[in-house]
Length: 436
Image (cartoon, rainbow, N blue to C red; front, side, top):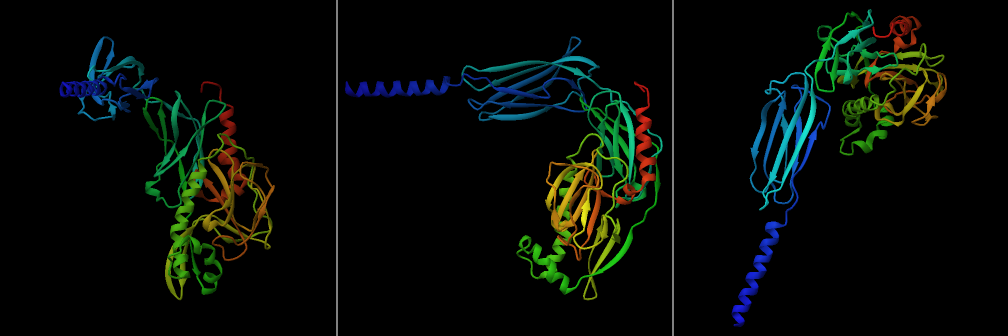
């Protein structure tokens, strides 16, 4: 009898445990749809995230209904043990028209008593790309230089700006209802591939590309040869030695700084370039370092020579200005300090944002007198010239950066260029009647 009682107890425990595991999952799968509301189109699939960490996903069905017509978008079964899945839902084959639609989603799990989650979501189908109306007329731009284009867009957009090669220059909505975009002619882009286009993508994902009239002016690269001496290497490379502890010698450090660190620093400029005001904070011409002589110019292709041998080639992307040692450096124009720290080849650097992606850079400083996040006025002293970074002597490397891309600063010192290419265009846009 004792054996029978023990057997019955074991069977009861097994049945209880089996029942627990069999019936324990009472939660239905979770569904997360992106976007969750608003306009949709055939050009951008919806994303459906499914999750069931209990019994696991068993099946999912998705259909779309519009004007009484229903089309199945997805009908998938899952093996046991599938805890999560993300699927894209394309509307391209559903033959939808512009207007409301509803999406029906049903997901079931592998529980003994299957749990089911259902959602019915309403969207607006929109197949129409936004219309771009260009307001500005003259777009003259030098190689390595900058231009301004003003335009209106027929609807709310999630992304807009000018695409030039691999560079995208965002446009910014202004109080007058128009967009302003400063764009560049990249210094390393050939004339045959310079084809600026306005891009506008609406909330549904529809994209419009719009051309506009422009005229390019040549400003060819300059060339220079720089002799690298052992004295220069011994005096400057210890500053970077900790970054390249496996370097064989000072020359090896120089080459890695000139190539690898330079690339990293320019990537950082692009990151900083995204932190910008949506409207201009500057007025008039930018100040130049007082009583300074030019030591190097923008788009200067430098060939580096060591012991008579060419060892590297890089492009200088700013203006080097030399005055007295540790001369006070004025802010070129009003704006917000978005960077005030050490930055590799540039040494101690201040970067000021002036809005619309336009930023000024002050490099090789011996000291910094402003903090990131503070507003500065034109002419305010922000630091002093020096030899920090990859500088062979005391000077200021002054740069203009547009959405992370270095452009020629010389234009921003020219009152006529600013008047013709920026101020007059801006005033013309403000004078347009509402609705134009």
